[in-house]
Amino acid sequence: MSPKELLVDSAVAGQFTSDSKETKSRSRLGVIVTGVLGGSLVALYAVAAPFVTPALRKVCLPFVPATTAQVENVITVLRARSGTLVDIGSGDGRIVIAAAKRGFQAAGFELNPWLVWYSRYKAWREGVHRSTSFHISDLWKVSFAQYSNVVIFGVPQMMEQLELKLASELPSTAKVVACRFPFPTWVPEHTAGEGIDTVWVYDAKTFKSHQIHRHKCEH
Image (cartoon, rainbow, N blue to C red; front, top):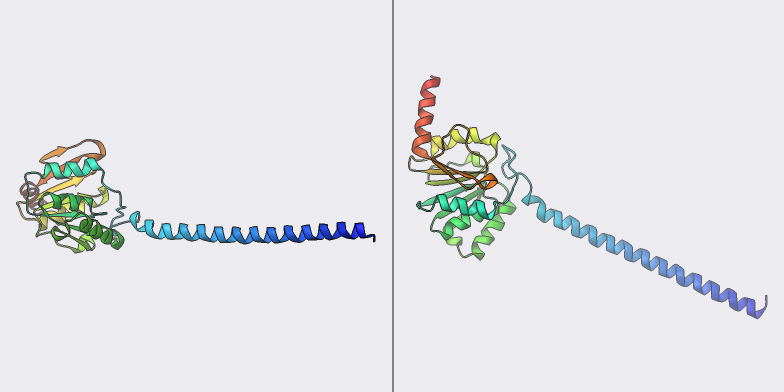
């Protein structure tokens, strides 16, 4: 082999080695990027998943944040009220926090611990942590007898059973505000809003007497 041919072969070999190293480097970089992206997606899912999983296990009640209009409608229909308020299935706490800003001693009950912790942080950030409380609890295992104002973002499958629970527990001076779906047999005192932002207001005197009458008819 002539010196010229040897020089050419060496150059080709060097180029092949360089290309091989570059290919391996790119491959390694691809693995690293894939790992980082995969890890980020896992982390994002871990944080986001609790916000979309069912909040109340007995009836599938997914977390759907209340709209600004819904919050305003709830506060509007309760503007003449005061005292204690409870939001059943309080989600990210926006109803509880809005109520506390308007003078209520407000509480939220939510089965999802991530949402409860997030709500507590929001209440602290908004400066209403002293007039709010958030509890990790199943609504069916809690008595609401101490509350004079009740807010519920329910689903149709749970409303009939919730009627019985609230009618037996709440004082006759209480008001109940249902959002998105009305109670099946109670007659609302009045409504506010329209479409998905509609809220129905119920007076405890009315639905408790209705409950007693229905019970007598059944027996």
